[in-house]
Length: 175
Image (cartoon, rainbow, N blue to C red; front, side, top):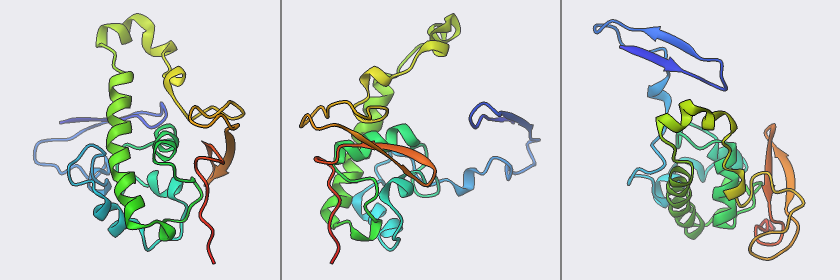
């Protein structure tokens, strides 16, 4: 088996013989796929509700749901109307259910929007192609929110930028 991992273009190849187990790639530490039927509000709540970390940071945790990066975390939170700094422990059951459904919808939308054939990629479209014109939140700091028109803001959470609408994605007050 040949295994290739490319984290931000620092790729590595491993050749594994059939009798060798794949302990190098880290696949056993990954959470479920974002389009899995097992990704439900109950699953997310069970894995994250006891944490006080911001929901944005939790979405980037590949051991819970794999494949959600910074761009799609912003898009998911925008679509779900959740503030990126909202602590996981503050989310209601309804919010967890909405978040699970939104993850499915946004990832499916992203796959459809970003679709390109191998021939298109090899012809150079992959070098210049960025889906940012189709994005609703990521990279939209200072631009009007598509829902309400208020200016989008950018904050940093765990060393990653996060764009959100301060009106549509209000943080809950904790008393």
